[in-house]
Amino acid sequence: MRYSQLLLPTTKETPSEAEVVSHQLLVRGGFIRKLTSGMYTYLPLGFLALQKVIGIVREEMNRAGAQEILMPMVQPGDLWQESGRWKKYGPELLRFRDRHDRDYCLGPTHEEVVTDIARRELQSYRQLPINLYQIQTKFRDEIRPRFGLMRGREFVMKDAYSFDVDDAGAGRSYEIMHQAYTRIFERCGLEFRAVEADSGTIGGSFSHEFMVLAETGEDTLVICEACPYAANVEKAAIAPSAEAVDEGARATVCKVATPGLKQVDKVAEFLKVDPSKVIKTMIYLADGQPVAALVRGDREVQSVKLKNLLGANEVESLNEEQVWQQTRLPVGYMGPLGLEIKVVADQEVMRMVDAVAGANEKGFHCTGVNPGRDFEPDAVGDLRQIAADDRCPVCGGSLRLKEGIEVGHIFKLGTNYSEAMEATFQDSDGQEKPFIMGCYGIGVSRVVAAAIEQNHDAKGIIFPVPLAPFQVIVLNLGPKDETFCQAAETLYNGLKALGLDVLYDDRDERPGSKFNDADLLGIPYRLTVGKTYEKEGKVELRARRTGATELLAPEQAVDHIAGLIRQALV
Ligand code: ATP
Ligand code: MG
Image 1 (tube, protein in one colour):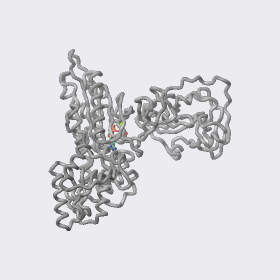
Image 2 (spheres, protein in one colour):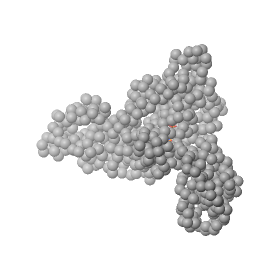
Image 3 (cartoon, rainbow, N blue to C red):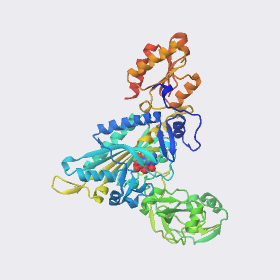
Image 4 (cartoon, helix red, strand yellow):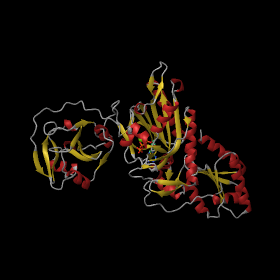
């Protein structure tokens, strides 16, 4: 492709809303343009990068024996009523009516549609196992679309669904997808981890997320230093403590003035106790109802665990003003004593002795609070987020926390959907049985952003070769000079003839701005016809990632580069 003819509007301006580097660079590099909140057009370069991801995903899904289909993006509400998710799925599901006043939604995922296909088209165990997948645009009306392609409202997903006759088969299908995903992200050239994960609104019993390691990741992973255990902190379980609780005498509850002391640390310091002696009370809205969640003062509430413990569809944290509106409670001075809303406590809280808690009165706390004696929560469970100083729940080893970007998620669904939607097949014993299902997603467009989050420097993107929209850029620094043009054209044509993806910068621009653009776009190899060509007939090859340069005779350059790229694609 000739740069002079390409719609590649690079810009120096960074949109003020672009908080993360992938969003900034995708806009600056002319890859994407925003249409409206959470919705983007892929310009040619963005679309090429997306196609690279799609190509790898498709090859590996096919290799794993999955079959590609394409389902409608608009889905009838009736199917969602059948699965029970019409009610359960929150406002992320964009619902609307057609001219006949029938309910529809834009597909955020396709369990219902694919289960409908299965119950119509698959009658016998002989047709199983089967795995059907598609690569398609999804819509989720995200509450806070942000970070460009990372969290859009409209985005491209690969979603696959497996159907098996029994649990053992479903386990094999899951394992095949686990391996296919590992190959996909390896081939993309990304550093990633597969971690145990919460199943969310998709449902099911067991799941793994594939996380690209990057500081800007919205997820936190906990990784054991000693064993293969790795989990999303949303999921990472904390075993109940085995230590005995001190059975000695207990203090009585005593109200003390703590004016202006709203934070745990401040109260603890003032009362000369450790923060672990303070009960932290946080108010959440669970399916519209206020709930108080209690954790030790040195711990954090994990809202997904809270949601699971409550069996709620949605849990929202509230700011000070919202807490006041919902409960008339003073943030900073809240506690479990005499609370009239639902109270759930972390298991650790129930082991606290003579604790400090807010008095539910501005400027006051209580000391001598003993859970079980002074208040009884409505529910007790594992509510808190695992921390770096916790021990591995599997082997007791030490843990490390890391940020990650979720690029893939695989689930064992069991019979959740097949039972609700009466999707059955006839087994070898003549019995009608529900399909055992699994589902498997990859955020194809998010992979492009995640690759950039993991691979960039101050000058721009550093694409892993397999995802680069172009593998080589040929810079012609003498676009008005006949011999320069001839040499550059020959190189461009030679590289193209070998099937490489080549961008030819034939523009009449200053060398400086050509170099800058090449760096910004992150093209792995840059081949320059410039000064050294004039002086000694050599062209300069530079690797974007390492900055290493070498001078080559033009007639060697093409094969040499083709070799480097082939190596990077294995
Ligand atoms: P998240 O926790 O990031 O909201 P999710 O758990 O809702 O994601 P899944 O339902 O597992 O996502 O969807 C499969 C994949 O689709 C995810 O692993 C992710 O890579 C991608 N994905 C999900 N939501 C978005 C989004 N809003 N924008 C881009 N990609 C997304
Ligand atoms: Mg997920």
